[in-house]
Amino acid sequence: MSTPGFSLPRPASAQQSAALPRVDRLGALLTLLGAAGLFLLPFVTFKANRILPGDPRGLAQVLPVWATCGCWATLAAVAAVVLFAVNAPLRLAAALAGIVVTGTALAAAANALTPAHNLIVRVAAGAGFWLLLAALGLLAADAITRMRPGPGTRVLLLAAFLGAVGLTLAQGTFDNVSVMREYAVNAAAFAVAARQHILLSLGSLGAAVIVSLPLGIFCHRVPRLQPGVLSALNIIQTIPSIALFGILMAPLGALAAHVPLAAAVGIRGIGAAPAALALFLYSLLPIVANTVAGLKRVSPATVEAALGMGMTRRQTLMSVELVLALPVVLTGIRIVLVQNIGLVTVAALIGGGGFGTFVFGGIGQAATDLVLLGAIPTVVLAFSAAVLLDALVERLDRVPQ
Image (cartoon, rainbow, N blue to C red; front, side):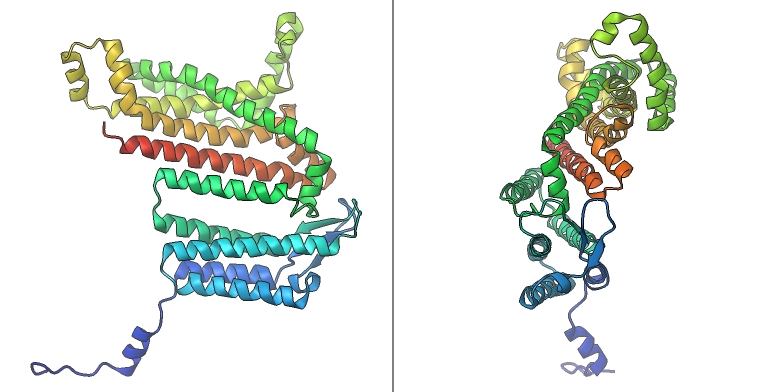
């Protein structure tokens, strides 16, 4: 029992726990992962050439003592920030500083291990580098999520990141890293693959939008057809991609053999034609389903009001219903684009081109860096497309309807 103006002293343990800073759980987990990558796994792998097994080496084995200690000290400061700081911009700055230091250490290690004018030696990023980079990337993503940036800010952050990476690569900072050496050898083929990858992804998406939007509108107008149409498209969606590519090779090959005009315009059993057709078929279900869902969310009262103002059915559809349904439709388009960017990689197995040529070529030659040359830009393309379309959808949702 206490008297007015008097309070019992708090236990010493409670005072001590109140004085201790609170540890961020996600920061602690990612700090442990980063530390494991830095101290328990090889930071780089030295190879006499691109095929031979590599010699794993830690950061302290390839950099001078002062550089190694500076890297460790910077990463320790980053860990302290993400463990105890709650300020999201500060956490983001710390994660980005860690990414810069880690990338700089990789470039320095590659420069130190590569003899002058030697084009055969390969210095690849090791498991420790990738684990540390993944931990820092997740910390940066967590900080951005805590900041809750608007769609425009997210696009600016993406542009700044891509610009910084592009400028760093253009300056030759990572020229001695094995992935960039593979790029130097395959620069012309890389440009062709990039163009083919983008054309297949966007071309199949454009064709699917042209077909899917009217089909989704038709299913919305005639509800009894909706289950059958969506079920048929869902069956296509369940077919594994490589199986669908193979199924389409036979009819397209027969068409090219019997119709010279088809072969003249590039329709064959292998190549871009079966890849584009398969991607088109995979693209139908998400756009049709989202078109139907978007039109369903439009209030009947809004449609009646538009008709009461003298608008025709077509005018109401184009100027009211589709405008209100656009964010949901764009969500389906976003799903399709990200999906297609990934599936084009598999299409390289049937001669579709794209970055998959490097992925499967690297697998066949046991050249990991060649695999990365195809995989990394694919991931960057898919991530960029997702960020841009997510920002567009959110911006449209914020516009007063």
